[in-house]
Length: 261
Image 1 (tube, rainbow, N blue to C red):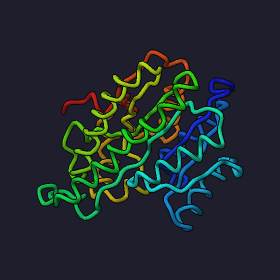
Image 2 (image 1 turned 180 degrees about the vertical axis):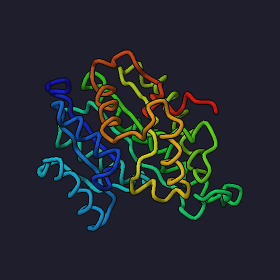
Image 3 (image 1 turned 180 degrees about the horizontal axis):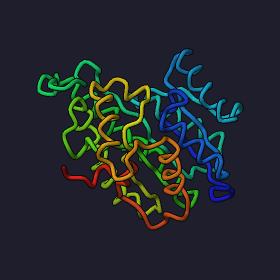
């Protein structure tokens, strides 16, 4: 299929073959787009990301190390990308972090200041930081699409999600403010609120097993989501089919967010 033919962009967050970012990259590639990737610094992290990327048949994909918590790393990524690519059509922000110690039911009130702030820094501020750096090249490309991954715990209390819920709320708000300012450059910014999926990141959340058990019992579709469903939504948000959509939070959770009790 050719929905994304000619689209080229940068994906942050491929940790392994179960990452949301991996499913997003797979959908983009199948629809004709091209993806460049970052990985956390260190040989082990690079090897893990490269294995996932190679599993998509992208053994020659462009990759670059990046600790998104460091401005100098983000500067280096976007500078290197610009030297190797003629355009930037999309950026996928699929990263988050919170100290595992505080991601357990009943422990939110104990969260230390440093852990609270680091969760917001890595999970939310980094989207703003990426958007600022992506803007010049996206503008020169005629516009673009920036998207990030959220979760319903940003709106309602999910036991064990704790400070990550606060960080995701900040992420969604950051998305709206970025959308308002970057729109004049024809850059759209959206979030996808995906249902629970067993990933490397979600394994740190103390209540993940309960989330996965709870959803099929309450969701209208009576099941948990599949990673490819988030990937398909991301591809749509990157494509011109969603050209009028910005500042939105799109639910891909089998409908569980609409259920009150």
